[in-house]
Image 1 (cartoon, helix red, strand yellow):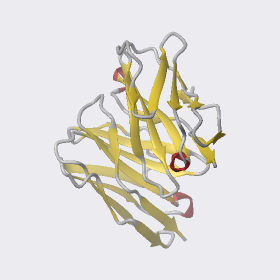
Image 2 (image 1 turned 60 degrees about the horizontal axis):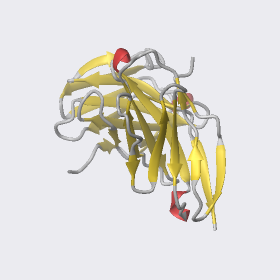
Image 3 (image 1 turned 180 degrees about the vertical axis):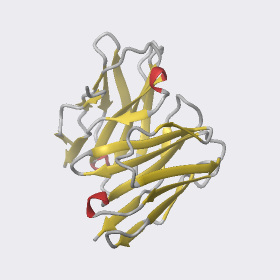
Length: 115
Length: 113
């Protein structure tokens, strides 16, 4: 079974608008971490934001926020005020304590910001 | 900090040759990951070390692949013999501890012809 599911292969958003990238996960662990990474066309992997399973507040980092709904096992990334430079592939990932804390990734969502 | 350093950045080799990819993790990080990225299969975890010990190698595709971490500052991924289907971008990543975010190297683009 897929541990991380990203159902949106591609998304478009108008510049300056907000966009939500979906991520659902599958785990029976109580202790786990959720991560989002950005991969621009240049190929590097850039860490964006982290949410711990015990964190009660949603994580925020600048224009990035993570909409963490534990009961639904979802960890959607919200990008506010989109910029052209946000066009990239976005990956959701998870580390589970019960799986030795290895880091596994979803299939990714390609985001294109339109001017 | 120089970040995770991978070498070479690009490698083109003939089928049947041995290929060795190298990684220097961030100093002080004790977890190290090797990933392979292709269009078809996405980002696959090949092997994961913690404190230089392989914790999970279930993603290593077959016996042609091997990985070592002789010390905290160096790891290698070897493919012997290489095949065209091994063509991919190989990433190394490291993290400070078992639950933290991982930082990635620039990747090695491998082409096997």
